[in-house]
Image 1 (cartoon, one colour):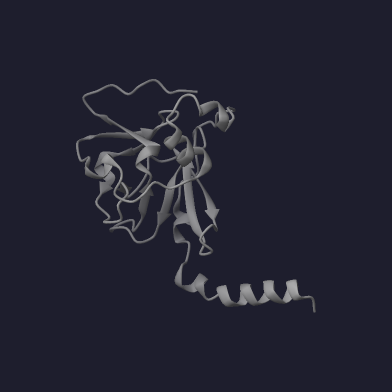
Image 2 (cartoon, helix red, strand yellow):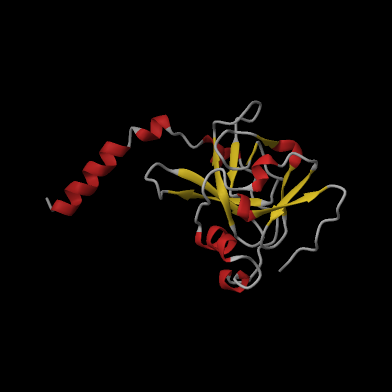
Length: 172
């Protein structure tokens, strides 16, 4: 047996019990994206948003916890993608998760897409804007009832529009 084959097999065997403790129920409950995807390369957004927002949205970085002013935003309004301005969350679904990032119990149906993320070894469900593909955050199954979902978002990936303001036109 080759050393590589043995190490891969041992790693899979060691990590397989984690699937019992970290099930991915949320991937089954997420509504598929209904928004048409832009045919715009990620690099085209570089001049339209801040370098920090670009790193989060198009290089899948994460901002430090507690760094977003949106953590303390509780007015009535809509949270939109910081790149293309697609509405992603309504304020009625925002809550304080205690994690240090803006969190929501659900997105606007069809306005997000998901994929599996294995960057921390334990599988997570990453979500992104369905229109521009910008990384927003991760969805977990430890949120409040009735849905039990926590959509944990990077604040720099969002802009907040108070309902008395009009939404900006979609960028694309």
